[in-house]
Length: 254
Image 1 (tube, rainbow, N blue to C red):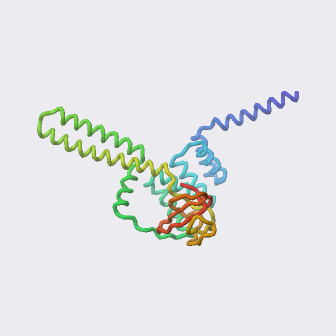
Image 2 (cartoon, one colour):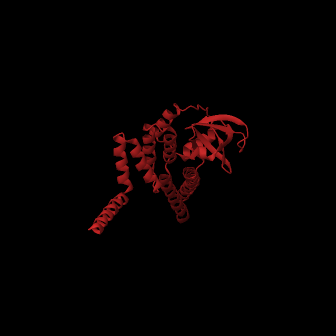
Image 3 (cartoon, one colour):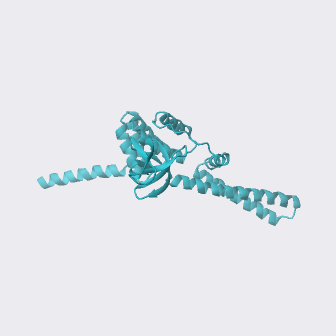
């Protein structure tokens, strides 16, 4: 009888475990959204983090997790996931607004160095479309260019040949620009070249040495660019151009 009870108990545990594993990411995300709407932010965060840990990522996951952390008053985590969402959709106004709102509440008010006009122009071009849309556009440009070049070779009419040649050449040029933009966009989206400070207050050092000079102080939630790495030290640059060293444990990469 005792053995039978143990068997039933094990079966029940396995059934619950199987049910939990059988939940799709969409179902888990829906459950997390319900918890968020019920103001159970900690539980919502746990579910969203579980989805991401299992290998899924999307703008919606990062954005909703950022919202949950923000509502739970966990500011560095909120900034981190808003920035992750922004990497996927750089032109999304909602996430931009939320980042500006959080930045207004951060301790560090770092003035940003103006970007050179051509760098700003190129960044806007790269962020004009998401990576999938950019891939489709590039395929269409290449196909159209090849068809026009084939038309140039096939016909004898001088006007048609001129129009097809120069239009095809122009589309081919646009294709190469599109490939370069897609490559840079993919590099930006996949590489971790920025981070958020997670330590409440941290002294930035002049060199990767605990005994080196403190050159400035940063606080949690501040975004930094990642430069060089030496052992457990990370060289960083903030938006005003200042450079220094911080322990890698004090930051989390975007």
